[in-house]
Amino acid sequence: MDAHYINEFLKGDTNAFGYFIRRYQNKAFGVAISIVKRDDDAKDVVQDSFITAYSSLTNFRNDAKFSTWFYRIVVNTALQYIKREKRKDEVIGEYSIADDEKTAFNNAIGQLQKQDLKKLIKRVFEKIPAKEALILQLYYIDDQSIVEIEEITAFTKSNVKVLLHRGRASFYKMLKHEKINKPY
Image (cartoon, rainbow, N blue to C red):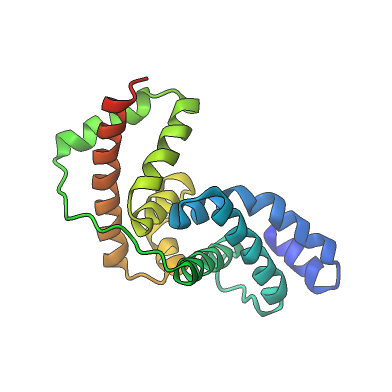
């Protein structure tokens, strides 16, 4: 479906780009918020990303999916935004999670109501390091594979796996803290 709208756009139908905005704006916002942490900043990042994609779509090569290419733009735009704003990622030490903790984590997530879950995930994502939140967002929420995440972020496969592991640990730690302080 994306290819059809890319071809229409390249033929001169600039209105065809609206398809990409409708299809990807929510997921792009999720990726952006996982990096920049604030709604207004994420909205700016998404808007800038769509402008970049619009002006660069003629350079799009069909060797990757449009979504991978676009999310890469969102990630780069968000990282540039952070540099401009001179924000620094919070550094959290290494954590290890036992198998029973992973099971407890999965069970806890499954028990939360969907509405509360979205609010809780947003609060937790705001408190964990940006790179970890990004990887968790891409992997669990946007259903991207490790290979696709590599392409989107330009991280190595091992770096993605380490950040995924750290992200799970950070998420679990913050989730336990949130549930203690704000029981549902």
